[in-house]
Image 1 (cartoon, each protein chain N blue to C red):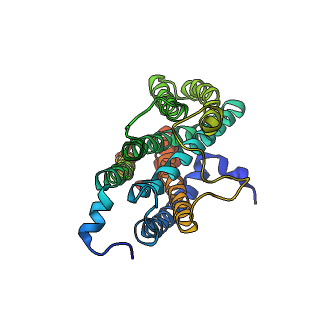
Image 2: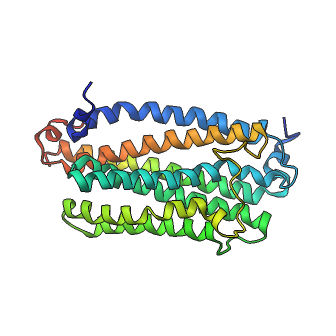
Image 3: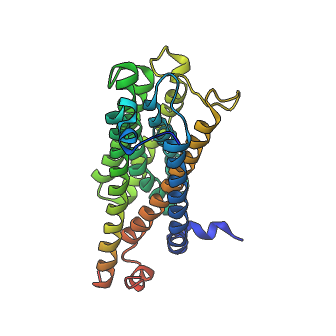
Length: 52
Length: 242
């Protein structure tokens, strides 16, 4: 195990801003892409059902 | 088995639907394992401390950004040569995920460059050619969106995709051809990787996670595309919200 406490884990040896800044934006973009596709699929299904 | 059967949107649509959960599931499992290695199993780097942990998303995203472009250009070319609708839809579906991977590579690179180089951005050959890749993806997507007739959009965008493919080897070899601040590759086909094996393992697991993820979302998107573009076909009307 690399970390002796949660605080140490989040601090990332002083590089917390950079490591978490990189990971957070990546996670947010991936979540947004999946959410957008699920929403688009739902819209298309509704349209088919509506006889369009 | 006749694989060409799946080159028609009607037969590919349900097949893609069956594949999505498998690839998404694989992406989640590999992602969890990869992140565990990245943050708990892999030790601090002796030079870069914990800042190097960005590698576990930076390299997979950068590789995918280039690989997706080549796959996109391939399908665009097939669509252009054989006039197959599904190929063009595949190319269009790959572009947003490719652009996303390119952006992630640039973003994570900036957040890695700042603590290690002291700069968010430098105009070196690797960074600049990767930025051009982002503009190629965005240009491709704008071109597709700007042309009303989908079949004409397929053809025009395919030409752009094929011409732009020249940029991919430029990105890949930029660290060799020019004197870049960006380091050379740590992993290559011809020699042993110059990184600790646990770090390499974590990185490769993340590469496969990104790979599975990309396949899953591209299949989701191509299904949307098929449903949208073939909406007047009888088989789509019969889907009835399934």
